[in-house]
Length: 369
Ligand code: AGP
Image (tube, rainbow, N blue to C red):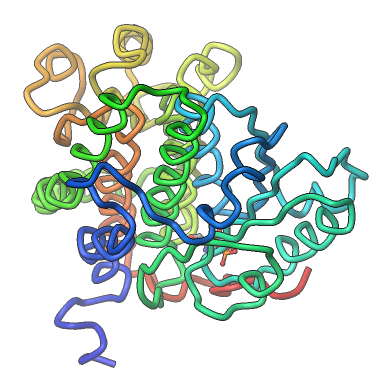
């Protein structure tokens, strides 16, 4: 097992550090930036069907559902196809309206999640075209879907999903760009700009990983918190949900993810000097609005840990701690902002002496209801 961990203390840490390579593997043979092409057999073979979808339905559970939420923002922004994201467990039992013009995308690392599988079967019965985004090759969901794209993240052993999440987002972003090109919803220049920037993502993740020691120091300060709030907006709202889920599952600290602006509608009542609030406040998007959310937290004495774009001074002046990530195009920011949140929960769990790779009550894949 020590050999499999490749010198890392835990599989989770190894898998966090594998993300630059995992994403390169996800790109391999697909992203041909020099030729200005994205090649994805599962999409290419069904291009008309998918690009002309009246609606894309995404079904998944847990972290994969969070990747689906990021994809919703990316698909709608780039390809202008309406997207709905559902928990597979809700979708399968609520008599959903599904038409033959719908495309359903199932996202699942294991490809074995029972609810996601059932959701796909239901949508297929109603005539939808089913597309799978799985990591495990030959898994049940990958076989049940009409077409798909593997994430190629390599085996993920840690129960807390890390590299599966970022590679799911990567595959779905490639798919969104392909559809955007097909439907003419982005220009060739924009398409090329995305491809070139996506090529830089692995090295930007390397850069984000360099913050490890600093994040460990922050983890040490907040490890005894009883609750924690995660806030983000736009593309980074799902990242806030994912950050909170990571903390809950491995450190057993209660954490909530919220869209930053929703804070005023309830969670703000929880804020006091005991409450750490992790805020994703990268430049672009709704930066100024998030800064004003940070001011509101500060005036209530909340402790602010902000994820910011390299060189940001404004938030540095307000927050108790800042963690920098490199700048990128806004729809790609989740690939970078996720990294410090994974490291933060990892270090908190280790400092608390928890079983990071196999947290209590959790299974790697939920194959029963
Ligand atoms: C994430 O860290 C989880 N342990 C869990 O939420 C997981 O993402 C979920 O069970 C879905 O699994 P799947 O991707 O294999 O379908």
